[in-house]
Amino acid sequence: MTKAGFINMFRKGALMLLIAVLLASFAADPATASKENTDWRIKIKSAAVVNGPRVTLGDIADFYGDLPAQTKADLSAVELWNAPARSRKPVRVNRNKLRVILQHYLGELVRNCIIPSTLTMQSGGKVMSQEQLQRAVVKVLTPQAEAMNGDYKFRDFKLPPYLFFKDSMDSLRVHIPRALEPGSNSFRMEVVSVDGKVIRRLAGSLFVDLWKPVPCPVRPINRKELVTPDLITWKSKNMAHLGNQVWDGKGGPWRVKVPVGTGQPIMRSSIEPAPVIARGDKVTLMFRGKNLKLTVPVEALEDAGVGQNITVRNLQSKRKVVATVVNAQTVQVK
Image (cartoon, rainbow, N blue to C red):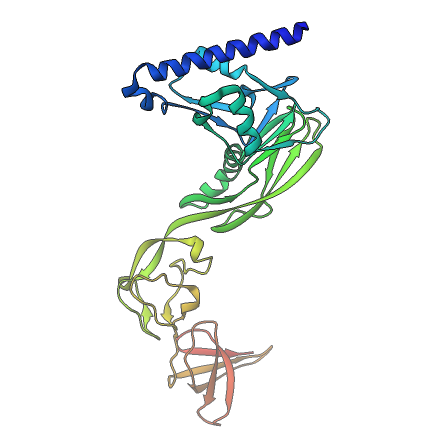
């Protein structure tokens, strides 16, 4: 027998002894054996990096629960199979194959293993889990979210389950092509080498909820009714479902052109400038030329606010013209 073969046989014998001790401890007290056997787990990773010539249990697993530190160390050192070549792409091992290998080395303890559908491995470099990728994205986007001045929440991340880096010095860079806004947002992730070269690009997305106070009626407001302060209260609403069309409560005076129910956000499309001139009002039409200024009495044929165009009728000639509202008494043509 070769020296390497002897060492492997010794290691396997030591592992079998360790497993026997564990199993014996579970069987020592039948009343508590079942409970003790659920106090720890070996969770096999979905993606792992191997740095040695052999894949060990510690490379591909995390240990949870009530296991002594030395037991974890011994289990971590268990060698399973040869590591993939460093020049190769990540390789995959399916659940059935993983279970067979773990059964061979761990025996009945395989019942305490949580095995994913697939394990993907790479020799050298590093790997980021989906949770680590999410934290990196959140770190970049948080300042923009805070600048939106509301209560925000990130959710529904679309990210790869893991991301391998060929070199441990490579880093992740996150870009968002436009300013963060409530609702769905896309972003780009780049794998960057130590010299700044972009090695790989990936796309991702997330949803941003943003709650902000918006003006809502305290009672239904009907068409053509003026929007006055006593009719408005401010309620927190999710801007992700309202877009940027909510009225900000500024300007005016306004009137409603589409009825708004109690507690509903008042949209900009639901209001219009309140008319300062109503249909039938008698006002003054002013004409300004380069060297001429004329005024004549006219009748408004429609409602209009300041700055809006309005059709008026000359009270003397009965001729209709379109003018711009200057104030409640005056319209103007040039």
